[in-house]
Image 1 (tube, rainbow, N blue to C red):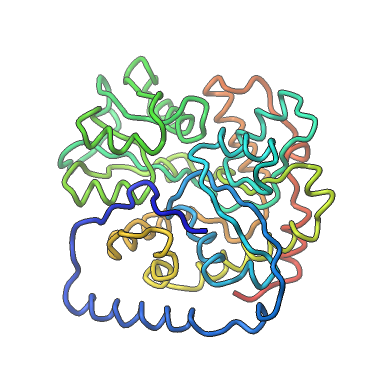
Image 2: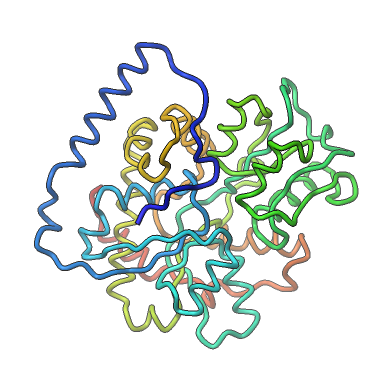
Length: 354
């Protein structure tokens, strides 16, 4: 089920040179032609519905959309019913309540629930992203950005307690800037409202995901001056979770789901940004193709996507360090209490082809 809108899904501005447009048109047609071909492995196979909730709709999660669009889940006998939670807290609530089978969000929500003593906690089983997906945009045209430029200014940030906001604060501290003291940060806006608020004149800077940033940049709203993901380094950022009871009762389903995701990860590694854009375009209706390509290339350039679904122990430790620095976590949680690599490691060891 493809939702009609995501952040920044409005059509962007700008156009390529004539030869590039011609090449892109041919390439898109070729990819769509391949997608239209029958997939014999899914023919006459009864599919099992899996309710999947994604934290937000963003090109940041391109490997997931590739796996969906190329039929990798169907090859595993799974029909994905996709919904968008618009926030890790909402995604976790849907998962714990049983409204969805699998929740895709940051592990910080899992840590919070574990510390609250949930009787049937969420367990992460496959990682998709390893960098923060936020970029920092300055209002207007900026040619030579320095982090000290934000002193005394106002940043439109993210929800307090969420990883995007904590990473922003982490990076600021790393630059010698004290959050909420040396720079103001707005933390009460919903994720999907932040870009619109900045476009409307609120703040001097905004920290936001693609494709909203490319859209605003092309509209002349501001200039992307930094990648928070590149500044913060590797971190276990977005992970697929299921309730412990669900994993114990349906290990076969979890493994098949993980295999489909891994195929999407491999496909993204082996294809061009333009080819990725052609495949994921249906998930971003109304968006100009060149805006989609630019947004995807930004994530590719910072090595945002994990090469396999294996969850990084080092990245998980880094995440908890960020949380403790932000004052959101008193002490670290054992990796094995909330994460499992049983399925990811088995899928990778067995090998798959994209």
